[in-house]
Length: 214
Image (cartoon, rainbow, N blue to C red; front, side, top):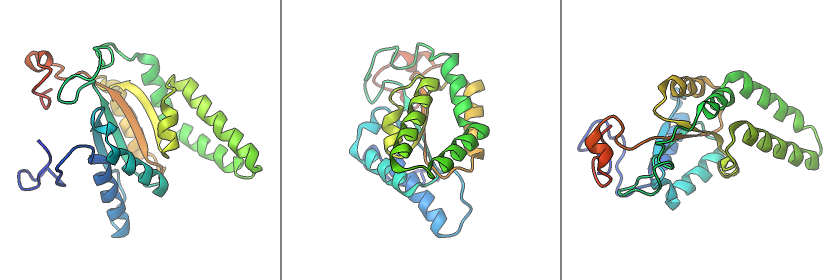
């Protein structure tokens, strides 16, 4: 069910419908900043079904506008309460080492530092050249990651990484550590692909239940 603070101390906010995790994480991040508390990573996890809701896009648009530090993890497994995609879309086919390797590179501090330096220099150029350098940056990152859809999240003000295999912890953990240690204030969209119920055969076979079992 939905998060409910009366039910669990681990439910940090209450919800009555889907697509609310990003706005909740954004509010927590802004709240920490306004109260002078230590600024750390507020992380929202959202599924490929919930991210189709308008509230999710409103929150992403606001986070990009505010340049608020937060991480959104998109869990792409082709499931809502029923399957929403083919087995390959749900992540049963590995996304491959190339995507995982490129995501590691794109999330590393040296790459982020070099990119930030290039952007600072480009601000000295005339507006027409600035637009050109932004387009080159977008095309270069798409070429490295192989993900043309990155432009959607970039337009919303997010730094996009993925897609990567969410079950490959040897690659996923270093990427999360890179994001944790980054001093960038830009919100991040980390796109992972997983398989619903992986590791537990009854949940793996049941497309209509046991969505919280892995």
